[in-house]
Amino acid sequence: MTDFTVWAPRPQRVDLVLGERTLPMTAAAEGWWTCRVEHAGPGTDYAFSLNGGPPRADPRSAFQPFGITQPSRLVDHASFDWSDGNWRGVPLPGSVIYECHIGTFSASGTFTGAIEHLDHLVGLGVDVLEIMPVAEFSGDRGWGYDGVSLFAPHHAYGGPDGLKRLVDAAHAHGLAVVLDVVYNHLGPSGNYLPEFGPYFTDRYRTPWGDAVNFDEADSGPVRQFVIDNALMWLRDYHIDGLRIDAVHAISDSSATHILAELAAEVRALAAHLGRPMLVIAESDQNDPRLVLDPAAGGFGADSCWADEWHHALRSTLTGERDGYYRDFGPLSTLAKALSQAWVHDGTYSAYRRRVHGRSPAGLDGSQFVICTQNHDQVGNRAVGDRPSAQLSDGRLRIAAALLLTAPFVPMIFQGEEWGAASPFPYFTDHADPDLAEAVRQGRRSEFAAFGWEPSQIPDPQSEATFASAKLDWSEPAKDGHAGLLRWYQDLIRLRREHRDLTDPRFERTIVLTGAGGGGRSGRETAGWLMVRRGSILVAVNLGPASWTGPVDARASLLAVSDPSVRLIDAGLVLPPDTVAIVAIA
Image (tube, rainbow, N blue to C red; front, side, top):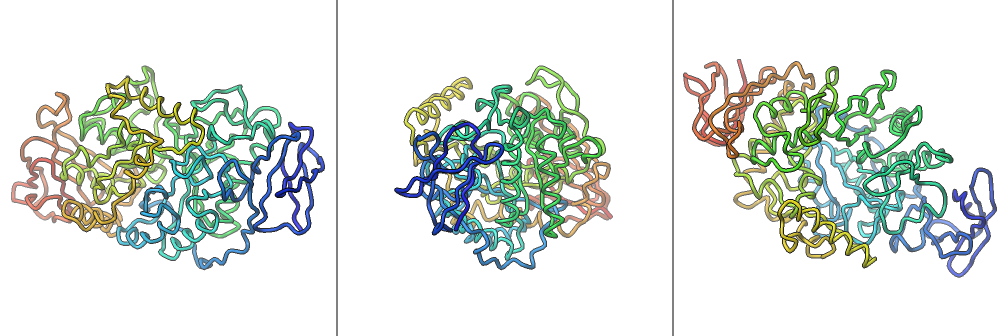
């Protein structure tokens, strides 16, 4: 026997659809409808009909085995045989995160396929596997940020049991799992929530249309919908944390912001289950309130993405100045990012043409997640090209060294560690031909403004575009890739061995820079950079000629990106585009 329930305050009539049977549901308080059915249980497929209309998937569907527009399926979460009873989680400070997209991480593009590569992650030395969104979305392939069945792991990836097997296996390998979730919008295809109730409001506008209703009339059940979703991933799937997508696009004027409420509920569940659970927020506002304690007026997230660290590094290494890279480039800007993650801390942004951000004073490095590349910074480029398509091996090693010796939480994007040749372009699989064409033309128009020929932009709907993003797992053993992989492994090992490299205190990081001649764009991008982390010194030469840095004769080399780097009586000699990590006596 099963009690079917659904929140649907808008329709006057709701029917439960079970195959060929249609059963009337009973109206309950506050817009809820119920129906008790014998001989229904796990594995039963069902849908709801609103005012006699076509069947709609359950907004809280646990599984959509045939896609977003088809019936939902009941799932018994308690029936899965977990083996991680002794798992106690991983604290975020000192950890290294690895971001992956399930559909392109393995040849099969499934949760099971991802399990096959967990040994690689252990050998690399990372602590946390961060998975891009897996909530059911349109078609069989996509980034996942247009999910519409937020409680249902994507059918093409392996559904609920597939995700549980991956998390269980990750824990057996000593890896925590963070899941990317999207609460600022839903996808354009298969989103029938407005037919059920006021899930959205036109009071605010987002890049995707009406905002999710977190503060208007009847917003209470919508807020609970999101809270219940977050707790489900942590409780029923044993996920260790959530990365909340684009919280700056969440509009909520309530006395308690939805992010603060969510973080508090996660902390309560973590206390009950006895293991750490993380809330990591993505925002481009540079606002310390994201990670401040609620008692101090904050939202209580554990950490936040700091994309400006990426922008400062990439712009310096490549000379790019288009779009939001306009605010970055000089070594002085990179030095600021290396010191405090955010570049704009109440300073003028030429890109935005206004003052942006607030000071991160009082925070520490564990409250910032940084990267040299991620799905956005690669995939939102015209052709999805990675830094390895532009940078020399030397500069890739410099980027890795600055990432993995920083006082922040470093994140590696799948394949970055061996300089993967595969791009990561934007891809979709919308069945609606009008929507598919709109996405296709939108991408072409967006990048045409930057001088790209439309024919050069990969068709997001093409299966070939998706296939091009799949990692080639033969690469890590090949020349041109194996050496870079060893470099990443060595850097993570050093991070483990030397406590100064995981010390999150900003005041323990000192950055010095010096010009070494004109950069590629004629600006101050070439020169030297020295980062002092307690007893560890990271020295970088981005100039066109060898540079000798002042280092005590008692120092010792811990790691060098090139064998030509050496210590002499006069100091540390670095040829162009090299980096050395030195222990200071």
